[in-house]
Image 1 (cartoon, helix red, strand yellow):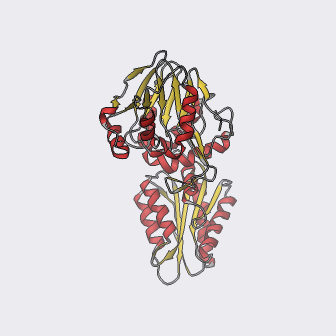
Image 2: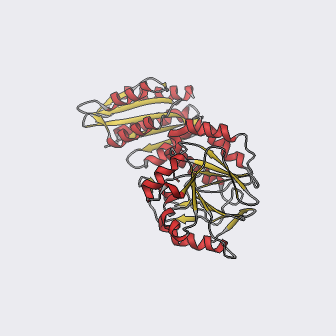
Image 3: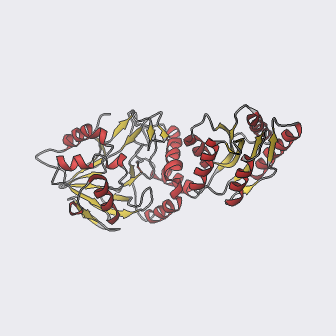
Length: 396
Ligand code: FEO
């Protein structure tokens, strides 16, 4: 996409769209791509804020050179985050602009050395609250560890009140012409930002809360993250969403996720879904775990308060994709859900037992009955499943 695009006085977006990578971090689907947002501040000193995936280096350098005039060069590279979707171009950029000083915090140094073999003497280490004078602009650095990695930090331009927030507030999806919140379809981006949050950052919600608490004191006119739209019209929109999501505040609705080899567990899931609808729940998401990528399941799980998990038994255990989902939800520290479970088996149980262990060890409102069918669900099983749906609806 054309750029540089001015986002504020002296500050330009010089990011790129990636419509080639199929799986972000080699696991999360990118059907609508992703943008890697990088920014350049053209003051007396010239500063880059983060780079991008190394495959886009050539476009990136062209964009930088469009901004550089009158013999200027890049003086600083601020590294808010070292994941290679933002730092990948660093090593080659360092060779192109050898006088460019890299700015990071104490934890950044190890990553720079480890990933790119750049010596720590090349890195100017900043501490929380430190500032850097550029001329008209002053940058201030805020350490926000574990949003998303230990070295993550945010950079604030005191003059224009722009917050360069790293992964925080960013989402999947390329920027298709519009780059600002007032130029794009936010309904579309909201779900893609939640998908990014819930799959990539959600596990670190406590650290997100900590970071939000610290940023409260800042007067922010624009939030410029490393993925997705830039919020200049209403930054509070995305801050409020992040606040809710990181507190695991959910919406009224139910996600039913089921694993079914020959359709019997699916019949069970559909009986519950019908009971939920009859009880007045109109936001029901039904996922066959063998068809829905876990990325989308987790997005819905993070959004809605009700969660009902059902699994057939596979070799005396949970069906493998369901096993993966349950372990991921455990790792993501999901809590506060109204949870129901059900399942089936033919010659040996196992799946429901494992779901029960999951339900009992977490901070969930575990709703009864637990329904387990042998072979196909009986009429009595169906009645119990309807009761489970009704009870979950009442608990929301
Ligand atoms: Fe967009 Fe944690 O990298």
